[in-house]
Image 1 (tube, rainbow, N blue to C red):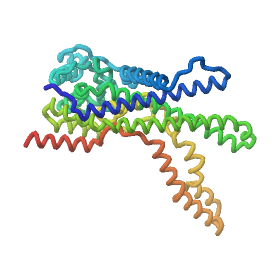
Image 2 (tube, rainbow, N blue to C red):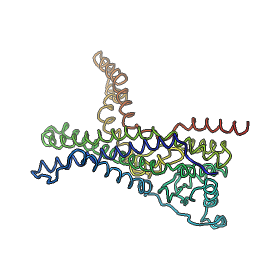
Image 3 (cartoon, rainbow, N blue to C red):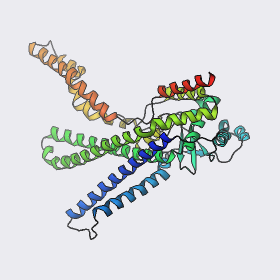
Image 4 (cartoon, helix red, strand yellow):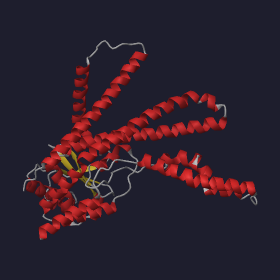
Length: 399
């Protein structure tokens, strides 16, 4: 039962790949322009002058090469922090020795033979998150399964999850999704730098305002950091928007096609739906580790594989805004200021003004800022929508 991608998936993959090449071309153009400006500011000149057609051609060729590198090494880089246990060539008897948990290698070998594709290698990651994803290249793919997934799925659901990944290999969508995931990782790294710069900028501003003379000392550093912060923030948000377009071009079609392929390989659309439902229920909230956040793009459900981060870094995104601005208008702050004695008419009026200002202005602004800072492009269609389509396939199969 050979699985072949439909024309719609191929067209969308081609469009997404063209967009990824364009994004990388823009990044290279921005870097080249910045380098030329720095050379000009230092009084040096570039001896080689290229015409517009040759410049565009060079950037396009470099962008294609960069995307090829991303497609080859991107997914491996995204999960490089995981301690993967490659199963290699095993047989089902190795399950007794613990080297082939739940006969993973045999299951994948059987599914790959059904789909008429090269057998992917299998690796197990000792992670609590239930996740299953495919990394590597189209010629040498590797299906990564976490121990959390092995603990939560029954045999039918496990076959369905593995069949979903084999269907991705058969649909030949691995190179483009790997390139997109690499671009998502670049955007995540920029967002990480943005958060750090924002913390530095807020710290310098607070010191400058509360020390008085510090305003003169920190004026130039604040200006420099502020300009860098704005540049990084604009670039990061632009990448997020472009990633959203790229993912929107093919993510739904890609996942729906893999779900249908898994249903054909297992003969049980209900098992695929059950696996999705179980994994979606167990899905944890994403963390802020930049290197592995993009792994959500590669999985059967958008479950990122990320390291735990120190607790003191966990609230950096809201720390400056909540502590130095919102906190001044919180109910606790109002109560503390009003608890010294019976409030007079002026004090009561001030409290009402503060309460109104907090509920009508501060809280909506804080909510919007949190939404903007936390927004990420969706990497998968809604699980409920996928389950509905699979249940429709199940009804057709039985009817």
